[in-house]
Image (cartoon, rainbow, N blue to C red; front, side, top):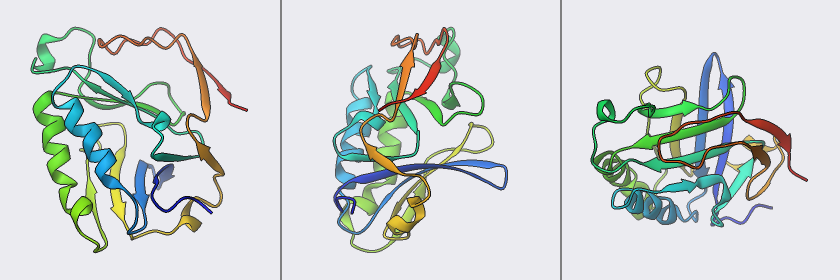
Length: 178
């Protein structure tokens, strides 16, 4: 049984629409996810969400959250806005946003943090971004991820992944972590 306080991350290709789900039961601590968004709204930094201790990863999802501060996207060379897939046909993504955009996302999930009622919130603009991201509380149970065995922390090993804020990726090699 998955710890009910953990945020689950799962990836699905649903009728040609790639979807990242961040979900859990009523007892899931979505405040920790909101805290990540708030921190990204104040500091230029990178958070590998799939490695956070409050997350249960289903399958091979890899999600890097990145803040670029207050600079407009057009002024940053090599950084593409929004949620971008790092390599075709893999569940590896980078989500880059400005301070204000991260603050907006933190506000969008506030009702899920403070209510015991079921609900969901979309965080991306698909198809302008590479996948749909939805945060869902008490709308799905863990049977949704039964076909994708998960584990805590990062299920994939990456090599040659640039940690730089410019979002550049030289090459990514995937292998299942054991």
